[in-house]
Length: 448
Image 1 (spheres, helix red, strand yellow):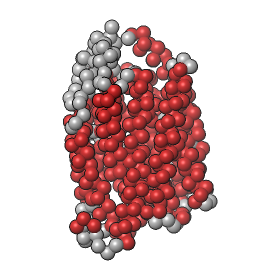
Image 2 (image 1 turned 180 degrees about the horizontal axis):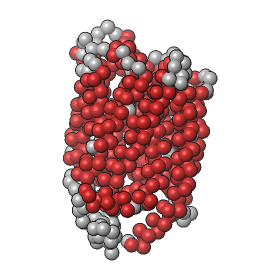
Image 3 (image 1 turned 120 degrees about the vertical axis):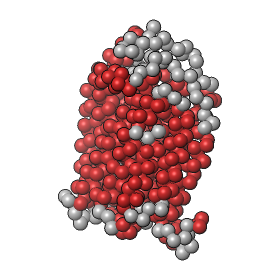
Image 4 (image 1 turned 90 degrees about the vertical axis):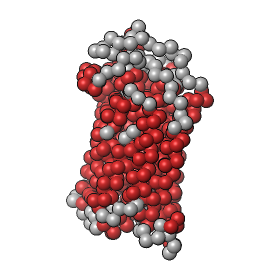
């Protein structure tokens, strides 16, 4: 049987028609590598706020637009059409083109000599990166059986956090090296340190794009596999299911405020409050953002699998509720008086910030027909990015410029106010959505 919903009626594909474990693992590994590169390219700017502000004469709010809005505007808007393309065409080709384009635009950031040109180049990075997540989640849903999907999706999202760690660790060292040497490496003489850093971190992605082409496209499978919907029908169908998706969207967006705000502003808080260099900040936060996400993804996966084993149909929502409820209060890290306490509390916060997202995305895949998975993932990415990366980072920058003007710890105070509030609200949203999610999963099981 199929799902009979407004043109979403199709026979089920054979549930044994999955790639071998080796092929699935290779697909996951390449997607993780691409995700690492994507976060390195978007995150490197957070270590260079000081010199970019100085060279281009910018305010914290203008920097927040470079880190958030400039990247997010096309990252969000193009995610939907690229998601629609991924639901109908080769996902690996779409991802490969995206990796190549965002890497090229990162290199071009290094040649920017004004706020306008850097803003446009950052927009280009967002254009390319919009191709990865929707197509990637769809590939994973067709490569891994349902009982392994939360783990695979969590590992994929972990790639982004490893990318943050690589950006902080390697990026900080690159910047400190360039600042301490008269000769610029790789023939980049005449560039400022921040410009050279963009070029250096952008080049590897051009080669990762070639690796993506080695992925073999898996057979599309699952509920509603064979019937293509036009764009109007697709959004009409998703709108009829809005109550099914509401809790996931709201909780994920609120948690994204914590995650993105921390990625964009916490390095600046450390540098301003404790006088560390970019390299020292990168070593400290790079280690935290390497081990913390691994612990968080592991915790989130184990909690969900344990809840599911006990028969809870709302296992993923339970995990989001619990982890968000801890991530919020632990966001007081920027208020800690010493670097040691700040780092320890931030490590706790990073663990719980990263325990939810794999659950949210895997759950979305489970309750969405196959030919709408990339589209729905793109919709979630749109909402999450606008809320977390676009608005969240801008609000903190604006609060720093106004409520805490002249206070070197002003960014940290703004982060704490916004983060604690959003984390607790995310926990409430997940709790309120549990019964609806259980019912949706039950009805889907009956249809299948």
